[in-house]
Length: 398
Image (cartoon, rainbow, N blue to C red; front, side, top):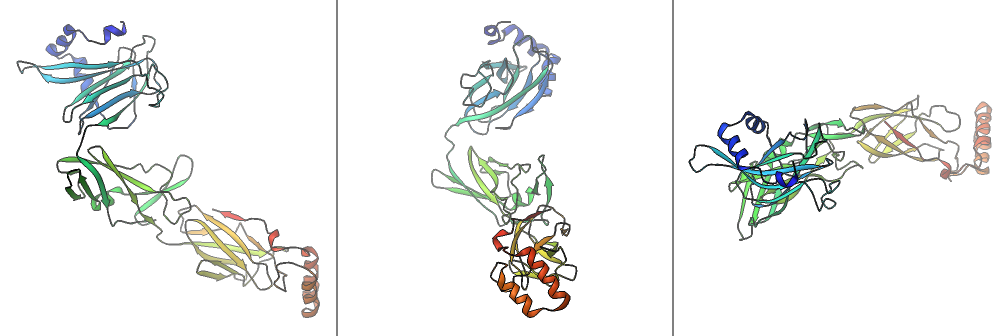
């Protein structure tokens, strides 16, 4: 069949469908999907005689485009369904047809042989889209389609304001999940926010209306959009944080609400500090993070409270060169044991000048005797000339 013949389905065929209520029509519309704007739909098809059906009822009048993606030689029809003059049958009226997209590049389509069916839709009217392949060579495969609004008619809405006192707390009001790349993100129950979110619509005539926890305002639907499978749902205290947004729309006007996620409690992290030169445990070394500091025990171990994400700690001791280490906590486990990744701390800086030199040797000779003196002299020989800047960067990760 030529494309020109497809542009107008014959009256005979239309009336045949209507009069007999053919099963193919009934089946098609029974399987129709109700479209949501800007959502990509993927459905399988049997061949070029098969059609996928979609239904859309706009809340606001405007110019809408129904498009295919990554499907060559595709076509689309647009219909309305109304009662006939006698009021006894439903009449399908074809409004438009498309088998090409001249602006495919700007719309993100792969080529001109995608369809882009653009038409002005009226608010409250139900429309029916049919999509398929016009190429007889296509026997089966997947059709990817999406409906967007190019331009809304005048809605009367000037802006939308959003407010809520809801704060989500990590490990209390949600749970940590893992995305496809293996990164963890925080997922929370959106209903708690929606119940307490106040939506204020400011109209162009100077009036405004507000509702809290509702799905409509002044008879117009409120849509809420949030995708928690993204990898950016982190607490504001995390170094990985970016805005966690909920998009709210009324009559084509949208506003974003920044969801607040805070840290519920610090994780208990166990570390181990060893002598940088000998590898022996250091007892009494100080490990500090922000306002918390703890001393290592006789095994060189210490437990410090840390937050999710990156933590900068300072490790110090008497006659030791202070060292800064980054500990990255990327796990939901509340008690973390990192003793298998020990921190080396260089001891022997008896003059606290961040370098091992002759002054430290003099201190050893003056203050130590016997086996202790012998051990310190031997260690000094392996450390002489070492400066604090010689510490390699150390990041300990879970």
